[in-house]
Length: 164
Image (cartoon, rainbow, N blue to C red; front, side, top):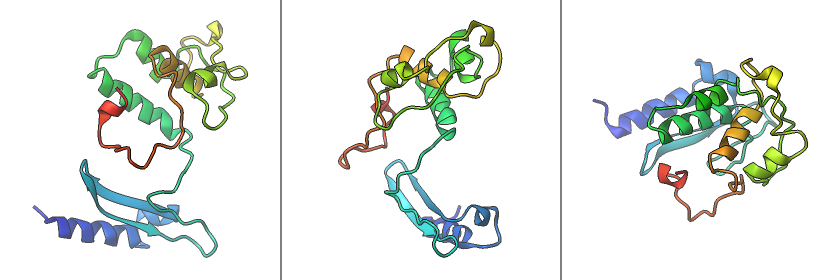
């Protein structure tokens, strides 16, 4: 089994290489570690004048938040999802209208914003990749008061209990 130092060296070499699949997505920040700490990290530059990223950079997640929410839900429910849960995470719940949410708005406020949170019976059972499914589900399952406000630096992100 490789040592931590060997793993760090391999990750660093891979991230910095111009001959791998990651080179097409430069610039980016990478990090490896375990639940207790980062073991190695780095910022890989892009073309001159492009953005650079660090561990403290804020980035919009856009559609990546959908799979993160679904993974959270599956973990929270120990892999046992109801038929209703499955409709929401498979984008067939009938909640297909989503215009986005202003920054720092709570989940419930987002559901109430503009036309978000509107159920469309004709869309129920039909696939629609919008964010309304997850937003509505989060509201219905008690996450409505949560916001995307930055957490104080004293908060640890290592525990799933933070979300429970």
